[in-house]
Image 1 (cartoon, rainbow, N blue to C red):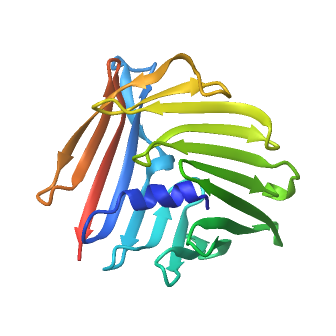
Image 2 (spheres, helix red, strand yellow; image 1 turned 90 degrees about the vertical axis):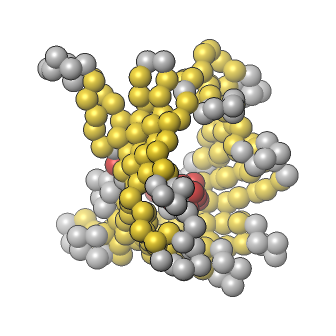
Length: 242
């Protein structure tokens, strides 16, 4: 499991929440209908989250082609220490992730072991995510993924409010592949392609704003990202509380 996925899960936490079910819907064009736009669920944003009374994520069921239940344990400093992933339909353990930190509790390594079955034969491989932190930058290296020698590098930059402002992707540390920049206007955000120097290429991917509905505790239950061409996506959340 990548750190970005864990952060996506925990970003949904609300005070005293016990469970949060998240469902994402995206528009698509139905060419066989008089109605030009219909909507479909996307597995990238569908998951069920469970939190303990201290607000720590203890499990996440992620609905995709392979539905996985991820279970988390934490260290003395309340940082994730171990994640175990099981297939929901068979309860088979398929992934083990260990989180390692330095003396200042900055994440240094996520060591991942993938387990699987193929025609009755077991096989596994090891991957690592290594993290280097500076004040406004985070470098992530993905090593030995699926037994390949190639190193995949991601460099994230942040502003003084710790908001992500750009992400750059490299092969083998120096072979630039692609980059995305982010701006934060008063409402919503803008994303756009950037070159290796961080300069914008072309127009923003979207110029959108959010519309939200809230429950009686002030926690959002419906989130629509909309631009001048219509809806980009809908999020719906169902929350229960301790």
